[in-house]
Image (tube, rainbow, N blue to C red; front, side, top):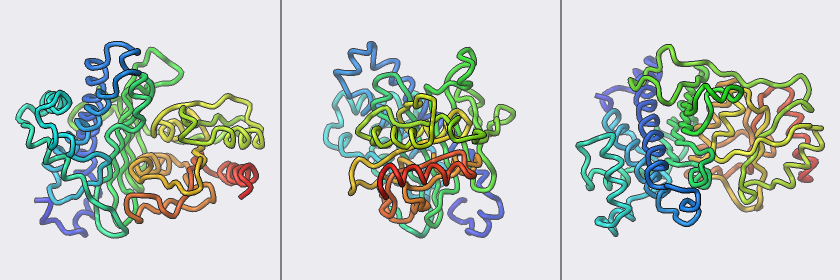
Length: 349
């Protein structure tokens, strides 16, 4: 049993079992989100008028991942973005019914109480010690609604450090240069073991097998040749400041604007060399579930991630990145220092 294994035994075995369970969980949740998007949003105009489908996807994705991880690691706590309040207060309502229906498509034995319990389990407060999973069941809700990029983001954190990071990106092209290659990517990173990309519609065993493709961040020969990524929504990142950073670096390409942690994946596989998320408020602090998985995917691909001051992320401060401001991710090397210098000049740091 997982609860009987010592920490020493787990370290000796690496994270093989955790990795397999996490791949199965994120893949199932990503496919659930895709199905919700197809079945509950018949038109783009409906997406703009009705946000209930993303609520169904959020709750269904989180419940499904909680159930899968609970089977494999019943003693592991989870920090999730959602809770069970909606299912508890309106258990017979249309949203609760839709959540249960979509979870049952993956786990037919599930009943409404199972779903509510799975959601309620995701209330871990985090902290600098111990082991827990952190989860954003649908990162990029506006991207989900408009048919853009969104991600199912899951990370295993031990003693304040992400050791596994997974991004399920149902709308991300397998090859950005070949539209015919299909869409749907699963990015997996393990501390000290690198990062890979797996087709979302691949082998459901969790092993990945021969479909795993190692990914590497790629720095251009000069910063001016770098492509940079930023959020679609101006409220998530100061696009004016980002444009000034781009001007200082002499970046010649238009930004790659994407919702969600898919931007981290774009840097990790060389689609972009820089990702900027510049603060729109002095007091706002990011949530750890919005960054833990993407942080590790970039780091294990050879890239670098810090805040705007060049400080490493501290995932041991509870639910927020309380000691950090903003995000600067890059392909690493000297490029990261050059980007930080431009950020400091643009923001008068």
